[in-house]
Length: 285
Image 1: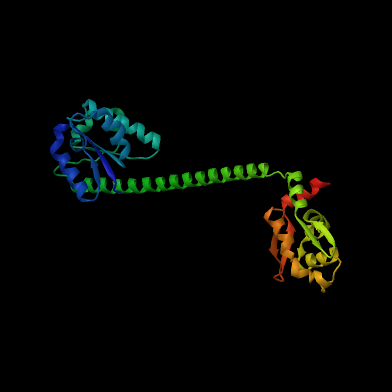
Image 2 (image 1 turned 45 degrees about the horizontal axis):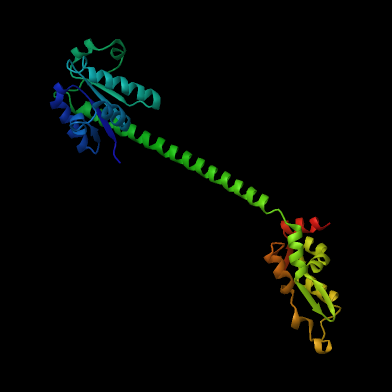
């Protein structure tokens, strides 16, 4: 992107205006010059006030005996003043062609320090215009970046709020159906050493341990206690661990969202009741 200058002038001053336009372009500055910007058949009002003024970083007005009484120059200046007030950004720069032209200015413009620019006094005023334009452009770019950052922050906050809303909705929809889970756990049965137990009964017996965090050894000990074995072989029934392992009990509970695992400081796997698991067991009481 390049800085851009709007050239407000009278067509009778076309020669010097085109010189200014070409010199600005050679300095890397775009210009909004009506003869280059308004093709035949286009709305002059729309191109000037909706496309031209608002797209520029600097509004140049060349005040001469030709432009001061010009209807369009006055309208353009009014539009520029309104834009300057709305944006709170000083982007007006005015020049006169001769000292005598100041006599025809309105009272408010006479109070301003308006430099002279003409063929004899050209390079220094042009340099001032170029400097002001780049300065205004830099300030506008900073404002745009700040605006983009604010928009990005607002979008992130909006996204976060939507995620929080979704989380709350998920939590609301995931209210534990105690009876449904109870029935499914009761259908999962284990038998060993002439002892039968379902997964719900096993979970109840481990409730206190799981609330604080149960290690593999804790759950394994509970298995041997329930099936009344110390892990030795019992005749034809075989070793307890040949038939069931800890994962045969914990795996189903994890899949149903009732248990979760964490690694302890000793690198042991520890099993805890999830929020859903706690709600389920509390719902049984």
